[in-house]
Structure formats: C-alpha cells, structure tokens
Length: 321
Image 1 (cartoon, helix red, strand yellow):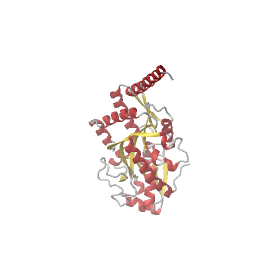
Image 2 (cartoon, rainbow, N blue to C red):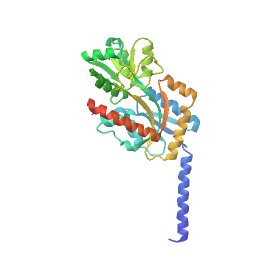
Image 3 (spheres, rainbow, N blue to C red):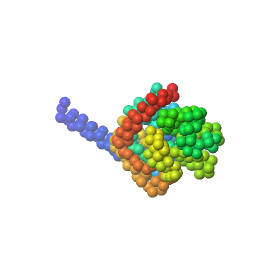
Image 4 (tube, helix red, strand yellow):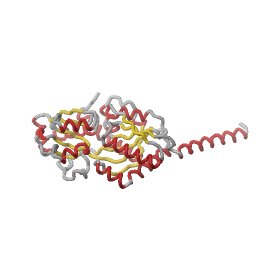
C-alpha cells in the first residue's frame, strides 16, 4: 500500500471517529422514546412522564412516553431490546421484568444481555392491605385466617412485584392464598375496594386514599424500611417475617450496544432531574425511596436480586406459562 493510500485511509478513519464522537456529543438531537412496560397511571408511568418533562427542558428535545404492556412487562422490554442501540429508545421499567420473569416465563421474547441499565432511579416497597370482609386488623390476623380458608388477593398481574410478595408471604407463613392477577394497579385496587377480593399486595399510592378514609386496612409494607406515607404501618420484618422482603426497583435501561458516551449523557441528566427539590418532593409523595445507582452497580444489584428470587419462585413452583 502506498504512503498516499495509508494517509487517505488514516484520514478516513479519523473523520469517521470524529463523526461518531460528534453524533454522540450532540445527543439527543431528535425525540427520545420512553417505553413504559406497565399500564398508564401507575407510579412507574407517572415517574416516566415527570422525568420526560424535565429532560425535555434540559435537552430541548421531546421525550415521548409510550406504554407497551403485557406478559409481565416482557413485551415492552423486548421492544427496547430490539431497538437501535442509539439512546433514542429507553425502557423505564421495574426490576421484576429482569429478576422475576426469567424464572416465571419459558420465553421472555428477549435475552437479558440485550439490555443494560442506565441507572436505578428509585425504589419502593409494596403495601399489603385488607378489605373489611377479611376481618383482619393485622397481618398476623390475616395469616391466621389464611390457615383456615384461602384468602383471595389481587395483584397488578402475573409476574408483578405484588405477585412475588404473595408467594413470599405464602412460603413464610403457610397460609392459603388465592391469587387473582389484574391488568395493572388501578383495577387491582378497585377489586379490593369493591370487596371482589379480600386483600392485595400493591403499590402504596393507589391504596393510600382508601386507607386514610378507613375503607381499607394497611397491614404491612414489604420494603426494607417503613413507608414515609404510612409511618405507623410496620414492615413485614418488623412483624417477624423477614423472608417477606421486597424492594421494587425502578430502572432506566437501553439496548446493550448503546455507546457509553450516550448512556453517560442520559444518566447525568436523569441524576440532575432527580436532584431537583420539587421532583424529590413529588416522588416522596408517591412513596418512592430516593437513592440512585449507576449502570454498573444497578446491573450487579439486579443479578443478586434475580438469584434470590429464583430460589423463591422455584420453591413455590410459580409458573405463568
């Protein structure tokens, strides 16, 4: 190869690298799609829309939320896993898609290594609440009732965090549980309020007004700490059931081959949003525990949680297909 050809090839490579760096440096220069893999109106959806609004203000580009639900979050996750790895399609999802579903579903519709975390955004516990028809003012009372006859529980769906909480509760106590999965948090709350079911394991915000009104009884939270919205309600560990521990993790994920520069740009902007006092106030009002992890730390956390949940699911014999 002649010297002139070598110089030309070197120049072409340099220009290509420069163009790639420029493209990443200008990210985002067009609308970004936030895929939420659970129903609209729930805590995850609200967080995604709030995050999108604030990122719009930072980048001067639209962040559009699209709800792609079904199969315990697998459908939305698969859509992102198979999207172009350019940072313009981002999953705002729950850890259960990656920590529960691999043990529940024979096929996810994607491989776990097709996605990587941008960051963990926040966490929260689940609230175990009862309808008056359950005739239980405490979790112990509900467990005792479940030793005699099955207690009917609602959750936000197969593979949802509440579904796993119920399996943990059943294993820890030996109570009989009849699990009724609904398509999202809102219909599961409605089923409990109407007395269609006797109890539920759901996100706190949807239950809060009914608990405060005395329509429902809050029995316990599954998180590692008490809910700031219901500080008098004990954790399951407080009540002697440390095995019933579940912190729901809220995550931002992108296709695995997304350039690191793009991921870091997005992560830093998300951290900037989460540091805003009014955003923190709104998140706390929805029972979120603030505390972020970068992508690498979030990936390690997911791996550890997935291993723990796999043992629980196998022991319970849980399957949805």
